[in-house]
Image 1: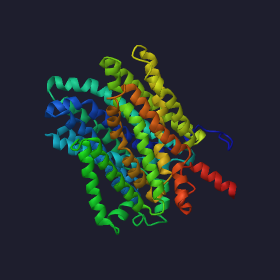
Image 2 (image 1 turned 120 degrees about the vertical axis):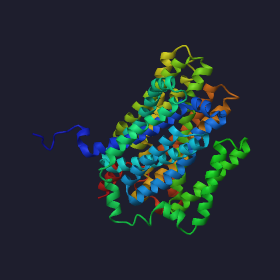
Image 3 (image 1 turned 135 degrees about the vertical axis):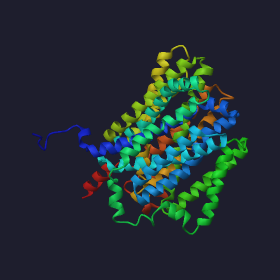
Image 4 (image 1 turned 30 degrees about the vertical axis):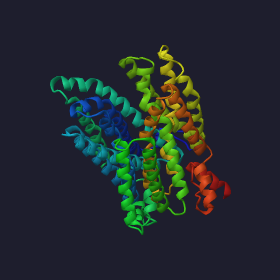
Length: 494
């Protein structure tokens, strides 16, 4: 017999239906990690198949970043207007279409378009799934929901590397140049599982409650931007932003001056969209967008250039590089889960700050060890990534706290995926700086510099403070706070 004082395990507080919903969403995030690593693993084979230059090959990786911001906006707005579930299903079907097109692409142009579709779907999947699970789980476990969700990314990365190792050589042995195509097709399996699991999912509780009280169409970010007073201007600005990002990430325009000018124009366009989306709370949106950009800037130079550092600077062979990179990704996976538990225990912002500080304490020692003490290097990378990259598992929870339910998916999808451009910019800046400095020192310096921005923004709740300074009346109690903190505050006042 269970009495009112009996304490049950936390995982039993989640119903079977909500666990099913979690895994249906988790698989979508797994696909995100799987796809990102997958294109990097087979880039050499693709370049050889289509006789591409290195720049053209690299543009296939960047293509997903070019379309992510518009995908986060469109599919996020769909999630706000129609519900989280329809947006999740639409995203996964787009993901499937992009993956199949990648596998059977007859040319570089078709493959580039397929990568744009994948990036568009990836952003929508992230925004819809993240808001769905955060709103579906109990308020005292929502940091866990966020952290556990993002663990799928690390699992997908590890899974892609292992399948690549065995599948591509086997397929190429009986049909040359089809190994990389077969690898893209393997992504259909988790997509089919996700579609099957998502058929009968319940809608998120928070969204249902809000939709019953408010007109979700009138409040929609997509409606405001593309059916409002400035719709013609905004269509033009959208085209300009897409064209500029294409020029930047296909290296059509080069040189620091031209790239910087194009980047500043894109930032101005994105900031204008944020201002229009919420005339009173635009400061919060821009502050969040900049913080997410800094977050990608401190993580992706290491993630993107670590294999290069291990090969060129430390002289490691391919097998050892693969082992150490896999171990670092394992640290990511543990970090996402740890972030969920510790976020619920200590509070989202407090643990975010502590974890980031711990990760940056380890950064310089990691790149000072050298290549002889491989066990120590692997262990330190494990913990550095666990605290540094793993804490990004709380990013969806942190970002979503600044947006009310009726604008949450589009706000998270747009601000997060504009910030995600740092994932494409970071490795480029790291590689450029490495021309003058040792690569290891460059990676450590870039990581610490941008991590400091995130530590200050999250730790001091700068988006909230900036909004308060500009328009205090528009500050929400939930801004940068856990729901449990807001509930406790209201209870104390009562």
